[in-house]
Image (cartoon, rainbow over all chains, first blue to last red; front, top):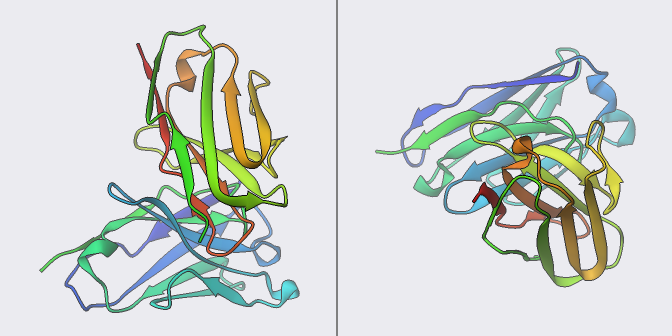
Length: 115
Length: 108
């Protein structure tokens, strides 16, 4: 079965940075475009960006410049770097398979931005 | 960015009834790049349709979709207990991909 497990969430102060990880298993990770989506009570679901598979160019596309997505295909792991965190970035962050629509989702990791 | 507006916000129905959920886009979606998701409390969203009308794996045929242009509809023909959830539409025509705010289908 395809499985995604996020980690790295927690409590962060405004202005801080965070790197989230997503461990993939049960599918050929290197061949799949991957995305990050977050969910907040106020703004709902928000697509943050995606990264193409290496054979599709490996490039990224983002909704916001504060996010950086990378991948380590040798470790079947996806990453999200978020800088200059704001109160409004408090959310559950999901990784998901797919670059356009999202077929498999992780359980999410909660990021709380608070002083 | 394309704004997706879902209506109604909440749909109160009984098991066995028909549910009709609407998703309206602020711009014409010229390609079939629309998806629908189901989310239950404490769970991640689950893909139910992609490319407008392609049913995802394991989705029963009581779920159907229709629409084009700016107006799309998700229909659940006869609600089963497991169908009570929040449903989201999502477009991937123009970046950034965006989601609707969701329609909650609750037990009446």
